[in-house]
Image 1: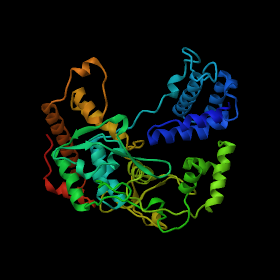
Image 2: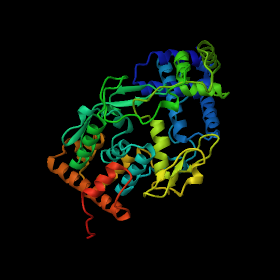
Image 3: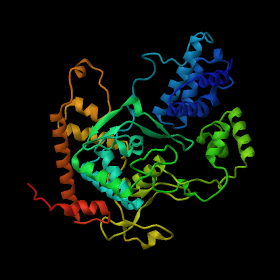
Image 4: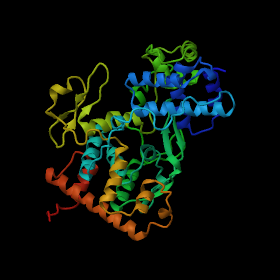
Length: 444
């Protein structure tokens, strides 16, 4: 049996989370099948696996990505071995093999974090870029709870409590654009305690936004999308995602076929081309629909990245470029449209270049460490599980929670004071109200 035939049978037997199924399919289609699809299972050798890995590395893929692709190859061939289809697993990585020097160069980059003041300034820019107060509230909630992005998008109004928020669901975005309502990662259901001022901030937002149940899931969510999906709500015709669904492949695979990339197997390419013909898909004429929820790509790429770096990302034919702003009122209001740079007074400087929405989880954990929060409460807040014996005998208490919330409140008040010293008001309505509610405290 060939690797391609077995891989298809193996994948069809899986019953995993949609996100895992998507990741497995992408790795198979884009990296494993192009290399091994027509190989007999018994003909795949350790040398062949090693040569494939070296070819991938020569294409400058991240070491972590190559490691994940090899892990999937090991998983597939391991099941084939257990079924008696091959004598051994050639993807097994033997201990104490290969060069030891230089391994540190392959490590993942250090995660960027920021301060509470940095969080406030980023949240202000997010609101200015989107034109809504909602992104300010969402950013502050991410930073003061350590929520994952999908958990924030999937936060329902009924789970906002008097002193906490309850994490029960997340919305995970598939390559097809579908947002799947699923349990939080690693079943990290939890109650996250938050300070009273943050509860008020979230509840005020809900009262003003008056969200309604979405058409896709039928539940009422705290946050919504800020723009039309792909800016193509009015254009008719089949979309890229329709082609992907028809061919039963990932959107990225369709893109690879359209761009003439070789990293697609012949069988997959034929399925995609057949779907394009059947649907009458015309490149550049696809449509879209209004986004009911915040999209990771739209939020991270076109809001978060410009807010933290001061630059819009590259989008062909344009290179990365500064965010043009009108200098007053501070911190500057972004301007858009043709020749916007000619009308700008200035541009933003970076606040925390390299920070991502997930970096707020690292920021929150670091802040809790600085406040001396006990490990059991940190794990409870951020959704981690400590399987040690010591952890079984340690528990969170109301006293621990009170100290944490007091510490977070003090840090927030200090950040507001620092922002008042820069400028007492803000063009963002919700922040302007917060800045004017309390007088500036004297420095100790």
